[in-house]
Length: 430
Image (cartoon, rainbow, N blue to C red; front, side, top):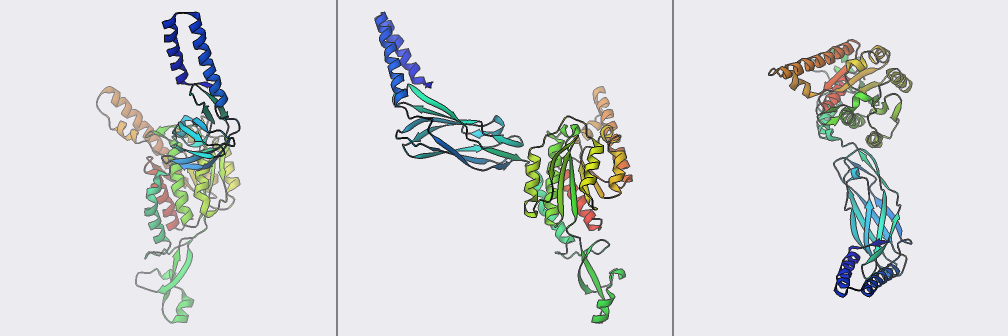
């Protein structure tokens, strides 16, 4: 039961009546009239218990976009239901409108559409639906809360999608769809063509030359169906914010661009998310659903305030990738975190796989390093130089071990990582 604002206004008017007559009889008469009106409203209001509620609509949405969830209310009774309905969602779901007027005739249906604009990744579940049915006098209403389950998963935004056409254009050149044809070790045979001055004599096909009585050379295209394993570090270093966003979110964006590009190239790509234990795993997803599977798995991930267990992560990589593949490790170039943990164990992975390490660089370090004004800015510049030097030394040690290091700001990391993948593909190392 709920008392409306009109009942309060009637009670205020009753106070004026009591003051005018100044007797207990007036008080009793006003009280009886208000109670009778409330009782009549409750008796005549359409019941809310028998209502049948169901949902339909979107189940996922990317951050920055909107999803629509439709709530259908069926009234099996004979009375007309007039009132309000409130479809409650968590604040981070950004549901609008929060409440709506409701009119459902007896035996009829009504629909209410809630527009969701999530502000955080992850699952956003509906909290409940409250229906308030007013009586004809508008003094009181029947009220009931219904549980109508529904959840919308907020996916990573994939802001780097704008770089995909450029990278696909380069991929088509590598793949022989443009004029550039790749010839070299580790590539697949594509076709034969006539020899032109400047061609590598090692690419001459002698059998074809003998049959055609003309010098023919082999053309090659990058190998397809290569295997790629993306390893996402969800430990404490991924919680650091760079340019207003956690490192983990920037790493996810880079992983999504790489996934879209590798999928177009015909390569198979898997995902592991790890800190002290395995947080997410996507293996052997269908080619047309790989990107969506990655985004769905990443949506529920948050940076954990624990140290990365490098030994367990390396063991998980070796257990998953039994054949030679490209391992893309997305973590922070933190000397304290990687110097003693991951660095001594990487040679075991490098000996079996091609390894690329992607890291989110903080452009704020460059700004601080340029400061030479007051004493405070000089100290800040010294700290920034020390941090940059530590990252540079760690990157040099990784490159000595055979690791390709990509260290770039959040907006540049996705295309830089995609370029590293295309460079390895062009060189025939995949």
